[in-house]
Length: 377
Image (cartoon, rainbow, N blue to C red; front, top):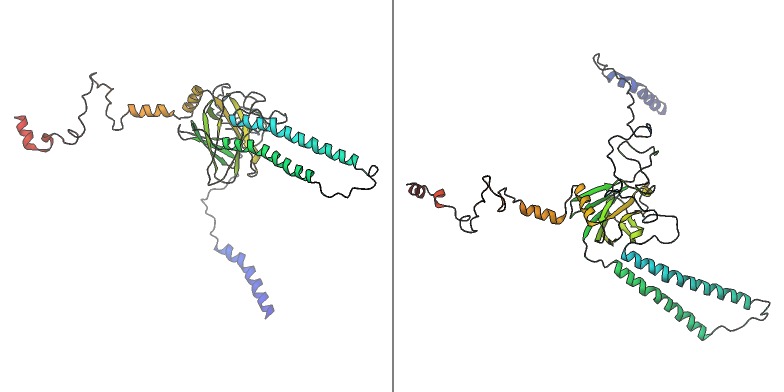
């Protein structure tokens, strides 16, 4: 029986290709003959054609709003040790607390402990003390090593709590920016101004992954891995509130010169703020491991005077809040000319009827034919 089962299985396997071939319809005589695909010519500006100029690239006027030339050593890594130059009130407060209080306190404690350790090794070595002391308690020393750390912790905690309070108690915002992290780029939206856009990292000229519609980075754009195609522009001297979120994984909106590092969690809105008085270009990066291209989603913020900020808003198809309300007041929604607009004959339009009289009670002739006939007679 086992042999019969094997024979049936082999027969079925042998007949399957033949049955499939028999069921397949014959090729049509009028069917078009397939030809091998011709490789498309690589677009200009890609790695295959590095010598040709990029296609459809708009002219960049460096120095204009949105394309300010960065200042070396300001708002970007410069290779020096320590904290970057801070340009916000919270950043200056935190930098002073770190440089003028924490570091000296750490240095004093380290030097004291090292000196105490060296003195103990030398003073109580075996050659100088062949018979060790049997003392196990010293009330004065125990009080000292209990009380002194309490004072040290209080000296650190009080200014830290003050700094945290100032950092998480923002003043009223002048500008609100919604920041959304994606894999792997940033999106910015200014809801009060009608501006929203995406920001991608600028690639190098010899990068094989750079496409024809992507312009290459130059030194005027910023350092490598930090320059972007569309910078976020904010006004100088104004309180800017950042509402930070993400749409896929956890990111982190970090701007070292602003003393900002705010996580961006999907489905959550987190808030931070900055007030920058110094115009310039400032760079940051995503500071949360968010995937394969985590290191390729930089942040670039350009701080400009108020007039240039208004020009940037207009360039991006937005509007200033005051200008929008003035335009809406000057243009009635029903299409009728406003009181300030003359008619075609140059005369001022008649005054509108008082509310609740003619508008609410139309002329009787319009609704009653008898009244209309008497009026015509």
